Image (tube, rainbow, N blue to C red):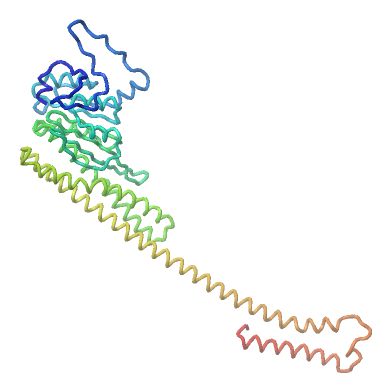
Length: 394
């Protein structure tokens, strides 16, 4: 980066970038410059939604020397110009959902690797740490716990760290990098350590942001356990949704452990400050603890889901048993009713036959006809009763 600082004039779009390596990202026109023949007319300012989008993308761009902010700029071009003129300055540029043109401008100015720029454009990357020459490219997944819907919201952060610059590209609401900037500006002795110190502060903020998420998830797990044993019918859906969030949380935290160990492995090679080494080791301890808690949550949710399935099966079996018992009792009642109906039907049948108004009918003139009919009715009823009794219908 020393060559770039030595050239006070703005860069022009040439066939090759610094060091003779051709850049595949210089597709945007360079900022207007002043030639010997006269000033170049300024290009018209973007209007409407494009201007608003550009203004919203550059969250903050500032220049620092010896840990102290010396200037702030609303545009990238002003930041570039002052950084070239600064003998020992560091630029810290914060962007939120930047446009492609802004990323290409940064790539041309700071010679960012095309693959890293492409990742920053597309987002939806896994957490990783890659080194391209003198530039570190870090992808982080930040998280925050939303109390109202009781869910975890994930954001994505891309960080470019060079010898004299830090560029943050944020996709999502988390993390709050303005708090990181205030913290670093309040501790100039840490900020004067350079871009690596800013990277530490960003890593620390992301990992600290996991603490309320872990606490919120712990409360959710406790509530789910209560709902499971209370028999809440909606608990299965809540377990499933929280399990999916824990998968995302695991994907955000687990790679960080390897990333921080990779940074610590390069302490000696890149002559990292001793105090900064201690800070990074502390962040590594915290992220390891968080990763272990997330693994515990995921296992606990798996166990709770198994217990819930067992309880639901037991409840279904109990309901089926109750239905079977109710059906058996109902069947017994139907048997009794049917038996008594058959017993009562026999004398009704005999009486109906003898109640028909026919002049010529057997047994009408027989003196024993009435006792015979009564006896027949009684015999049939007693026979049916004994038969049903023997079959346990009565």
